[in-house]
Structures are given as structure tokens and as C-alpha cells.
Length: 341
Image (cartoon, rainbow, N blue to C red; front, side, top):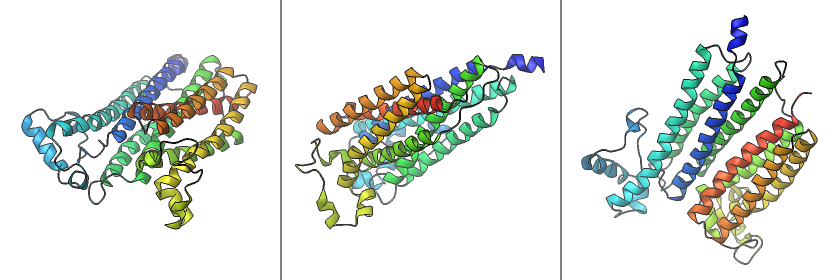
């Protein structure tokens, strides 16, 4: 028993989880660029093992290009695309999938090593195993998303895109939360895991709505509806969309209404995050409060800049990355509020 206790490594496991969380933020960045460059349908097959290698010969490239030519996106939008242009969009989707495989290995192999060494603290093994399962599910949902654009559509379903992005951000939040619990255990062997408080859960739900509509905005290219802020093409509310479809149908399918809701629900999200930050500061974690304020403040400015620049790829990609940092900072603040004292 003493040997088992000696082997426990909460600090090492926490550091590993933070590293995986950083990889997920990078994955969100690459995923955002993949979407912005319309690259996501360039690879039409899911080859878990053999797909690690890109085409290595001209013949292999031509074979991949021929597969792409069979889907609606090429036929209706990119007909006549050159092989060089295809290689450009292929690169981003390939990098996105390769990074996903890297994250899987970066999680699974250290987890196995810690388990074999019996270094995982009691009660945390199921959490880490659950995160591994969620990572595998993320890969499946990613392919499920891609398949929605291979037969009848010229792009992927924005609902499936939202599921793919939200699961990635959930995994990120759980990694941060678990790492914080492990750091607490390192400082105090009698540490009890933080609990989810009502204010943290409420903030999380409000943020979830904002993230869903952010994904819808990306999936439907709704950011291109207007390059004005705070008005939209000279008006506060795009009322004309309601003449064509019912409100709730438009709310989840019409780019203009989705864009409008995303930009104004952001302020509801900010209010909730301010409350959470104040609670975290009152709980003694000033840095978590600072992180939340810095993240949402930067995100608001980037959101406005994305609109003003007509969805400049650099600004828009950074907007998505900072969105992931908002999730991480929110998880940090929620954990601080939920610490047991």
C-alpha cells in the first residue's frame, strides 16, 4: 500500500492534461481554418490507419482528386479546380485529421503508462477513461459530419458541425477541470474534487447557447450576411427573414437571424461570465477572474472585427481560438467557485 501511495503522480498527470488541452486549442484553430478555406470535404474517405500518410506520388494525388470530383461541392462550386488548388484545400483537412490522431495518441499512451505504473489517484481512473471514450466519439462525429456533405449537399450540416465543435470544447473543459482537481490533490492529500455549483451550471448553459450559434454562424457562412456592426445592413433586426419562414425555423436555419442572435446573445453571455468571475474572485481565485475577463473581452473585439473585415480568415480563425480559451477560462472559474472548503 505504501508503494502504491508513493507512485501517485497528481502533478505529472495534471501537466499532461494541460498539454493535451493545449493540443485541443490548436485543433480548434486548424479546424476553424479548415472551415474558412472550405477544405473539409477534400478527403472523401475515412482511413484511420492508412490515412496517416498523404498521397506520395502524382498518381496518388490524381486518384484523390478524382474522388473529390464525384461529390456535389466540386461539381456545383469548384468545377474546373486545378490539382494545385486541390492540394491546398487537401492540406488543411489532412492536417486537421493528423492532429486528431496525434491528440488520440498523446492521450492514450500516457494514460496507459500512468495506469500500468499505478500512478492514477483513486477516483480519477474512470474520469480519464471517460475522456478517452469522448475523444474516440469525437473522431466518429467528425466523420459523421463530413458524410453529410458527400452526397446531396455542397457543404456539411451546420447541426453536425455544431456537435463536432461542442464536443471538442466539452473535452477541453473537462481536461481543465480534472487537471485543476489533480493540482488540488497534489497540495492536499485530503482534497475533495470541486463540485458544479448552480451559478457555474447556469453560466455554462448560457455559454453553450452562444457556442451553438457560433457554430451555426460558421457552418452557414452567416458572418458574410453583413460587414456592419452594430447594425446589419442599415437595420437593427433582419425582420425580412420572418416573411419567408417561421421564427424558430429561421432561428436555426436562416443565416441572417442566426448572425443577429449570435451577436446579441454574446452580451447575455458576457453578463453571466462577469457574475462567475466575481464569484471566483470572492472564492479567492483572482487569476481565474482575470482570465475570464481577458478572454471574453478579447473575444468580443474579435467578433466585431470579424464582421467589419468581411470575415478575414486570420481574424475569424483567431476568434474561434479565443472562443476555446473562453471555455477553458470558464471551466477554471467554475472550478474555483465549486471548491470544497
